[in-house]
Length: 288
Image (cartoon, rainbow, N blue to C red):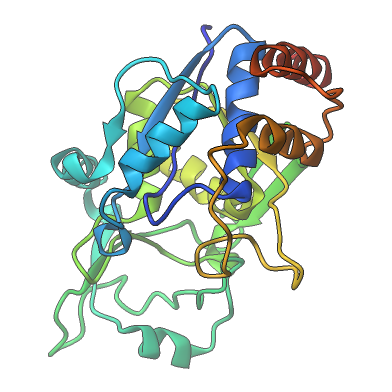
């Protein structure tokens, strides 16, 4: 099977060290295995998109020497594709009229991503007077809800969807298609065989695998790298004040990102030497 990987940034601002680490890992894995490396702009959440940031991200990747294969896909242009996938799910996808406050007040529990576990209020139909706000995906009942996979970095990961997540949002109350649906549909359509991304998305993977099974599409191999954090232990992001990469110093920052990933790349004099050494080092660490 030919290797196809991808980097899928959200255009909410410029690249920072955390996103460089994720991009570097996915690029190295593709090149070390003689594969294709795609770039997809994950702008399905259009409310958070910063105008011009997608173009800036693409330009930055080029400056850092990470040149993608094939056409760049933009999620905001694929709404009809996501609608078709949702329709394919049939009755297992249902309308939900619950507000965030109502879900939080149910006190069922807190999911791994910090959201309240959905209590299943609308599973059997909307209550009188309720209007559909979102579309949710019914997950299996407790006892039949375990989904597990072997992560190439993190090892065995399992999750009980019913008790740890609850029914998954497919279309949000603001009208945007949810990330969980879009990423599964896009990976399948692009033929992605290997997903390399940050560990902040590790807990999303079981629900994505469940959705892949329902849609009858292949499950890629996954590798989740540790996330870069600030001094307070928070994941680097625009919200936590992450600094944009200095595009005038690409080599220095690539070496820093490689070091974070545990790759010993001895003081390369040029970008070409860095990439040669980094690809070889990654291939030794992850030979399959």
